[in-house]
Length: 260
Length: 342
Image 1: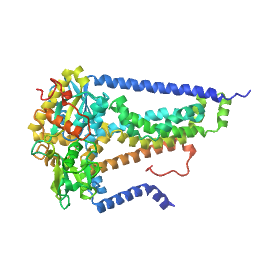
Image 2: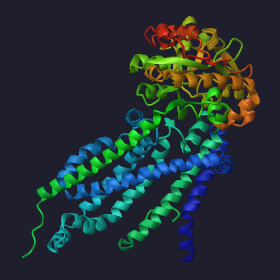
Image 3: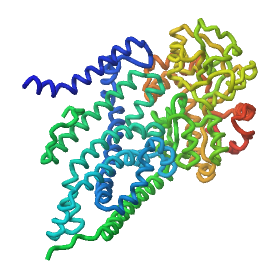
Image 4: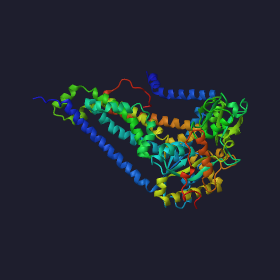
């Protein structure tokens, strides 16, 4: 029993080690300058993390990501909930969202650049767009699944429309909303990097794309590992927070992609 | 008496109002933030840059104290771009005031984006006897001449990019139709050596520092270079939006003065330039030392002066190969604001 529990905890680590082993072997077999070994990439990590300027760049990206993610969550949850509870709101926004959803958000960067310039706001808008859609859809699905009877009971007890939304719909939809936020978090990380692909003043993309331009592939892959590790770390933190917030819904089994 | 649930229609209207308020608030926020950005931009020059080969700008970025006016008389808001084409879009949109440009991207901006701009300085060009972008093949390749490229897969850094005009012309001069006789594929400079060695392409274009690295490793040879079809090719220059220059002549003069001074510093102190470039490119000094500011590097005019006749020749080649309509370089000349400015 204990061995099984230990194994379950170690599975994500074993998966990562397995991936690194496959990478190492593939790189040795292919013997390609643009595909360094996993060991070479790992060796380049300390020089990136030890460089003050690189850390400032990574923090600048994370700051933009946090703002973009925060604004997206703050706007998408109420919108998704309203869509879930009102057919009029849903039928108004659904076509708009369906148009925006499949568009690669980085592809919007040149157009956004024309409206908002090349600064932080344009990048945060790209992150906002990347995050908002999954959060809206999950909030919508969560709100739609709320039993009508509960709302009638709330109305019968004298709750106003806004009170029913915050005291009945929001808590009931919370597990679904947080699932959307978890997806949104990963997308925020992806759009954080892609938003820096075309124009940038600072950021993790600075290190990644400069290294790519200069053919320094160990740095490129080291940055990919760092971004991946950031994703795992953020996901683990979020998962902890989610588990606390929706302990009452107690999922029997969750996809163990994080180390939480 | 039991309370009646609110009607669905009424509820929808109320929610729509809430949504409208939410959107309005977000709109106001974006406008406020946008206007803050614009008001800051008025006090500065918004400059686009890229890597590599802009040593004068790298000096300004990394050694600002060497430039008395920089940070005092004016500020620069630096934004790095991936290549010159997105900078052309940003210039045309008014998101940048000055930027690094290739002659072709600048001309495309004029033709397709109604961009009006002045060429105020020049970064690098192909000096006689110096480095010229070239196409390489493997040593044991059966390709011995340009004509042998018929039926082969040829790599180019950017399809439709600045090097393609002279490249197309050279092929035509040697009886090869660039649209029918070869399979042209896009291969970035950074991966060109790999693509060649792995046989993914039969010939590929090489640029520094990758050419120096490939030559040091051996096994490849030069097939032809761009200088064969056109000497003094201007690779990158500095352009500023005409409306910005006309509105802020003193500001742009101060900027061009510093570009001139930056170029002088870069050429005068190679050791320090290696450090500056290494800081910007994050490339080790030993790698840069193999070519930077040596005979196997591009040429740099000591006063960063644009070579307008050479640019005109390039525009003519682009027109001849059907990449652009005929353009006169005179439209890019400002009567007084052009490097060298002391």
